Image (cartoon, rainbow, N blue to C red; front, top):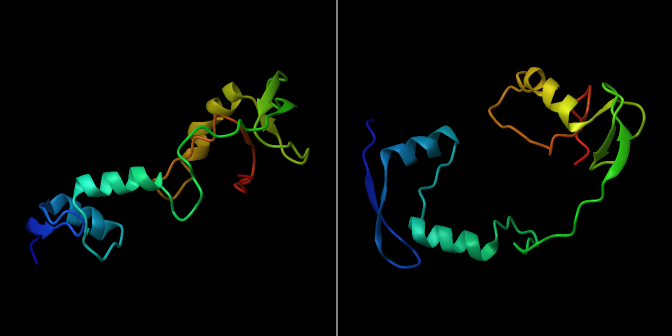
Length: 130
């Protein structure tokens, strides 16, 4: 079945909007079965109002600074500030050494997601502490 642009009506403002073929392909590729029920403007307004929500208590404002810990880089020996408590059972890298290793590590991912953990991380296994 060939896809074609669909004209839909926003459930909030009742305005027409087009659900394009490209959007339909995106929805299908992400296994999203329901067409959008809000126009792009109302979706953006709702997202801004809920601050990206997901049922959490995100305020959208500034948040408390993350506690940082001092560690010695396992590669270069320089002091590094990292956003997790080093446990001692895995190497810890400074930002520069972590970034230098990152291309080899990211190629092992089987999906297209990427995570920039601020440039700090444990070496070795993929068990994230965040």
